Image 1 (spheres, each protein chain N blue to C red):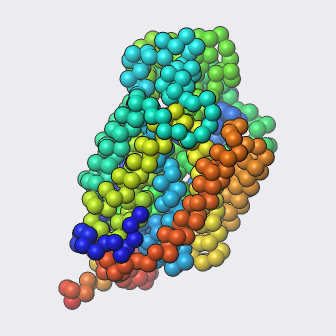
Image 2 (image 1 turned 45 degrees about the horizontal axis):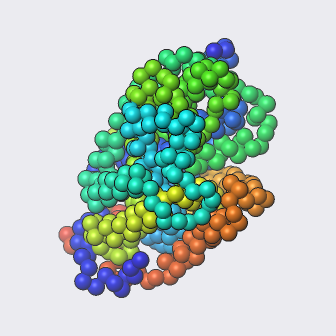
Image 3 (image 1 turned 90 degrees about the vertical axis):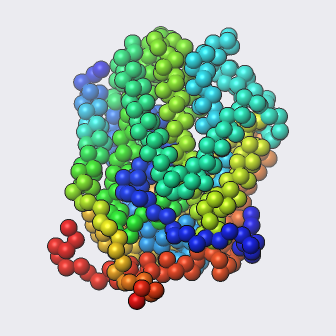
Length: 535
Length: 45
């Protein structure tokens, strides 16, 4: 990583900070970020496992009491302080910069393994046509583990590369870097404006096709039948809060970064509600599509839906290939499903990478292209060294589990405590959100962010700490989880502290005249406007 | 599909997709405002 002192002779930034050219493009990009792999392969099973139809109640409570309030917190910080995560938090309070770098490093970890899953999904689009998994007599699971990933027998780190993953991963990184170099308007906005409508149309066709499969109704019956007893179980409520939290991409630094590109007079809360409900709307569609397909799979195997229901990698790369092989027009189902994973994944990967690119762009004060390349190429190289290997799956599994819980969740908890109780920033941020927004926030928002937020996040984190400490994650060796799980999560904090200690040079965006102008405008607008002037 | 499952399917669709429609209607009633400087930039003064 370059220090600011290395910017001598580097291309400095004469250009203005980019803004999304319209509200529609911001919303599309924010939805593109929120709708990721989790919406497709995680939500359906979480809902099914935690009360089926009755899960709607804790789910809606979690959206309204934690998801949307925390989303608004991210919007307020990014939009008020108009910077990447480290810069925005630093402008809020000098000592808070470290929180932004923590988020940048979390995004680095997620980016390096996310690209691998997108590459797998891209390959499975092709396999859906060739039905490559049919050649393995032990089924799609054996094909995935042995033939495709060539998984080593024991967890470890090796550099036995698998060409059929390495090549698509290079392509994923090339596409992503091209989009990132093009910038906020020509890259991120355009990519989302193309990929998101495509994703929605493809997924809608997939759902329609799935619900007409034999047995689909049994799947939907299992998915929507409510189990009211589940609502008495606190773990069901924790599952709802946990799912919403990860699904909405709050506390990753993504929404801080994206909202910093919104125009000053943006309707932050009105846009936020659209993003949150669009994300949930897609999840519901995914639940219907996935369980209709699982209903068909159960029907074909003469099993109950309960026996075939699964989530994550097992759902996408083992259950779905089986469905593709058995269903009428299975190849179409496969291309639509895995194509949806690719587009949902790409739009999320772009947003994750933008957190890192924007942070370094601000700190170095460089123009878009050199800043993007200096960040994206090393990230891509690390990703390509670690994940298209025979040990990549183990690494991905452990890093994903630990970065989610002891990265994102822990960081979110620290942020709500620091901003709520430590710095007392919530009244100022609420005032900022209310300035131009259609839905005004009151004391309720401050209570939800400063009270309910820490309580819910704290409960989840303690639960996770107990689970992870009581047994070795996935049965991997202690040294492996120690280094790539606990060690990695700890290293993110140490790295964040070190990065925050690097001084901001005069070339950086810290004293950007454009921000001072923004600040003056924001302060001038703090004078209450006359009634009726706004609209 | 059982009656209770159908009811919960409809409730889920109405609350979540309905919520999206309400949010979109709210947004469309509040058109985008243009950013003009409240305080003129120093160089134009």
